[in-house]
Image 1 (cartoon, rainbow, N blue to C red):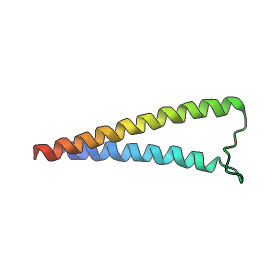
Image 2: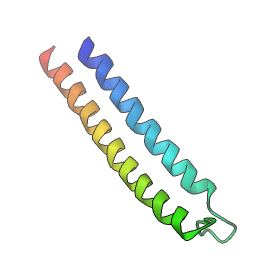
Image 3: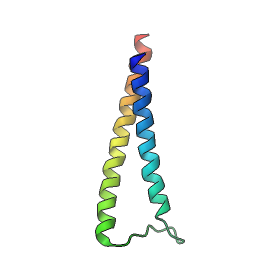
Length: 75
């Protein structure tokens, strides 16, 4: 049961992080569909943090899926 709860937590965190990052990107878009930033520095820093955050979310989702697989394999 511990593996199933842990896997659900990892999956929830991974999908929530992806949703939050994608929502922030969507809200930055202007009328023309282009992302708008107040400065060049803010644009570059935010893009790196978002890329890093997406990789973290992919890792969390993968760990969650592995835990689900282990749970169903052991039971």
